[in-house]
Image 1 (cartoon, rainbow, N blue to C red):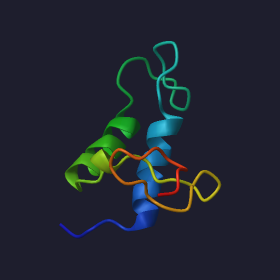
Image 2 (tube, helix red, strand yellow):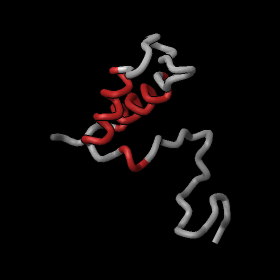
Image 3 (cartoon, rainbow, N blue to C red):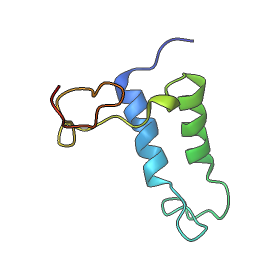
Length: 77
């Protein structure tokens, strides 16, 4: 299995967000219960071992660096 591109990972996270159930229904598909498109995106993230990393930060929300363990975001060492 090859490593996914950044665009693929971003698309999977976008699908998870867009197909998040509201009031028991998928707002995009209208399905009640399991949304298979969301399930497939989640499966891809887990299979490629990138789900644990969380969704990518957009440049607008990025703080310009990664905080070290025990250091709150935005705090300069």
